[in-house]
Amino acid sequence: MIGEALALAGSVIVLLAAIGVVRFTDVFSRMHALAKGSTLGILLLFAGAAVNLGDVEAVTTVVLAAVLHVVTLPPGSNLVSRAAYRAGVAGGVDPDGGGPPPSGE
Amino acid sequence: MTTASNVILILAACGFMYRALRGPTLADRTVAMNGILVVLSGVIATRAAHLHTGTFLATLVALAVIGPVGNGMIARYIERRAQ
Image (cartoon, rainbow over all chains, first blue to last red; front, side):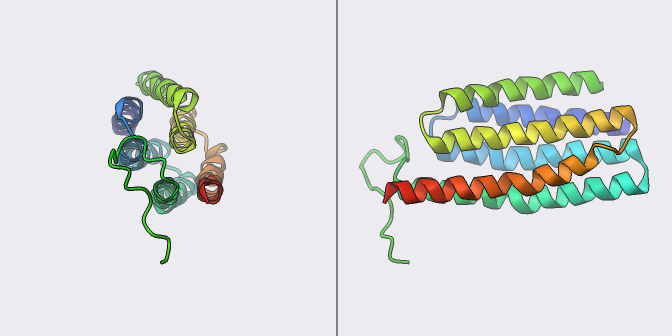
């Protein structure tokens, strides 16, 4: 029961992230909605699965998957958003045409 | 309750798929594909919990590892293409 409630809360948060991805206007806002929302949602979903399964082997696998998601999902979004910013596909976020920063770093 | 969370996750997947098909830039499509990956992991976790079997759980680890690798490759491609 607790596990199913956690999974339901996690799927609602993933749905909120999807609504953000659909409704926001530029790629950085969409990435913002996805990175935070889906990380919290996937943690809640995995916590629900771990509570429901209860078995030690399954719980360790789920915890490993959760740790990997938390470690890899925000840096992946960071990579894509930095590439999009440098490539200048801001999509209306900078109407003055500021362009990407000088690439001398 | 598992059915309810699966239905909600499928709605979220429909939103991500809309963005993946519609997205104006490649970065938008990459964001949407990340979201679809998250939905896929969530559905696998809920189904495994529903069926009380841990057989599919290794898939979650594999998805968590290979998803950001594709992210990094697409990011490099976007950056390289702009130069």
